[in-house]
Structures are given as structure tokens and as C-alpha cells.
Length: 118
Image 1 (cartoon, rainbow, N blue to C red):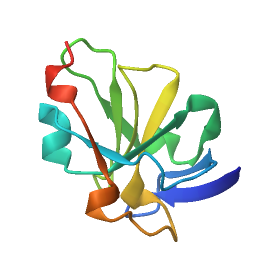
Image 2: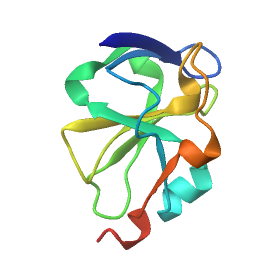
Image 3: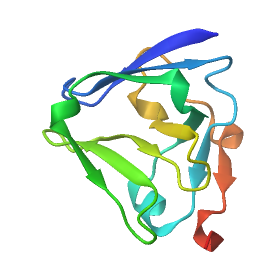
């Protein structure tokens, strides 16, 4: 398992995520919120995620059933991660926030059917 560092644009929010294969199972979601965020996500067990800086500068957003919680930097506005509704044992990170990791090709990014998730 390898640990990867990530951050928001202004570097205020910093995190680490550990993964056996960081580029495996990266996906986009088609729910109304994720469509507007237009980001690729990587899910890992929440025990593999660690916020290392900026917790006091995080803002969160909940909607619909108020279960999933999406986190954004209060300064630069970048979405960094969220607690999943579908699997509360997992954290999803914004793959583009990872430092020194190349984004998978579009054909390697899956699609989650969040629009029909009730």
C-alpha cells in the first residue's frame, strides 16, 4: 500500500490517502451534484484517509437525505473529498487534488449511476 498526498488549490486543505492502486476504480457520478462538480473520484475505506491540514477551513454541503457530506475549502472553493452515502465506510477524494499523480484516461474512468440512487 502506498500513501499519496493531496490538497486544494490554495494548499490550505491537505490530506493523505493510502491505496493499493490509486488509479484503479476511479469514477464519475451522474447525480445532479456530481454532474455540476464534474470531477473524477477515488473511493477508499475511511481509515485510509487522513486530513493533515486545514480542518478549520473546510466547509461542508449536505443535500437530499442529508447523509453524504461534501467538503470544500472556504478559501479557494475546491471540493477535496466527501463522505459517501452509498457506503459510509468510505471516503471519496477528488482525484485531481492528488499531488504528482496522473489522471487516468477518460476511457479508464467509470460511471456511477448516482442519479437513480434513492
